[in-house]
Amino acid sequence: MNVKEEYQRVYARIDLDAVRSNMEHMKENLSPKTKILGVIKTDGYGHGAIPIAKELEPLEYVYGFATATAEEAFILRRNGVKKPILILGYTFPYSYERLVREEIRICVFREDTLAQLSKTVSDLAEKGVLKKAKVHIKVDTGMSRIGVSADLKGLAFVEKAFETKGLEVEGIFTHFARADEVDKKAAENQLKKFEGFLASIKDKTGREIPVKHCSNSAGIVELPRANMDVVRAGITLYGLWPSNQVRKDIVSLTPVLSLYSHIVYIKEIQGGTPVSYGGTFTAKHKMRIATIPVGYGDGYARGLSNKGWVLVHGKKAPVIGRVCMDQFMIDVTKIPEAVEGDKVTLIGQEGEERITMEELGELSGRFNYEFACGLGKRVPRVYTKGGQILCTKDDTADF
Ligand SMILES: *Cc1c(COP(=O)(O)O)cnc(C)c1O
Image 1: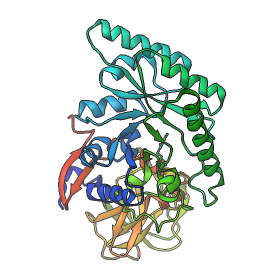
Image 2 (image 1 turned 30 degrees about the horizontal axis):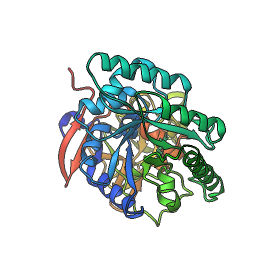
Image 3 (image 1 turned 135 degrees about the vertical axis):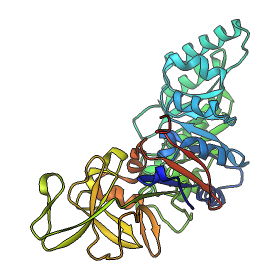
């Protein structure tokens, strides 16, 4: 695979075959009727939401996609995504008209939202647009973040939503706070609370909300009882693990993203020579060091200073000194074959060695979710399928 010369400085390869295989392996672990909502907030955890949505949308068991914001949802619609899109966070009223027009599902838990949506729907009807506002009710069972409580007060909210003109209550969901831990007690309690709440809705109103969901990635892997109508797959979609406590032998996952650069300079330094800002590394003896033209401006965390490592010719080369905004140095003393222009793997596999996002997340004091989301705009994404380049996403291409 040859990428454009412009991408020699740095590029992320996004393996769409891995996306699909992760999805298929998750599906195999679910009950047959359970569909998957692909969570592609923060531009698909930094991987690029659009190519991933396009890859997954044709799959029958993919219910649709979830984003965090209205803007992320609009981008998907603008790029032709037709399946349901659910916004997982609060959406501000300025976006309601467009959300209703584009049939993007809004998550509701505030009283004022119900009236505002109802008004949006009637205003649209006056303009000749006959659409209901499709909503999913968010229930808080243990995150204490957003969502109505799973009690009588919450029940009153659900009834109010049922009665609000112009609203279609399509779904209801909750979110696990601790499903990624070995001890599943907290998650089980949340599930019980949610199930109890669903039962009380049925008792009180005689109605059943069609799309019920609660599982995230950790739940998909380890809590089959929480399957319901839909599960929300985030981190596992990208072949990454929700935490190191989640069992890795149940669903087989392949990391989707690899990150590459090239050596731009090699030099020899004498013992006693400091390297990079602050001189936090000093050579103990004569060394051969290489400069990599990537830095925290690309999302290669400064926390990797003196801790991270890369692969050169399939061998480990440690990061020495501080990671700068746009460059960092590595020790290639033990890799004499390394020369300027050589490829460097920052994340990914080379031969027997592999550097994972989990590892870099941990080493840098972040975690894998954060490391992935932090990969910057300056890093072009190259999408591959069947070993061929399918498309690229390049935010610096407008020159
Ligand atoms: C982000 C998010 C998810 C996905 O979580 P993962 O751990 O990445 O699977 C699911 N549901 C909600 C409400 C979220 O905010």
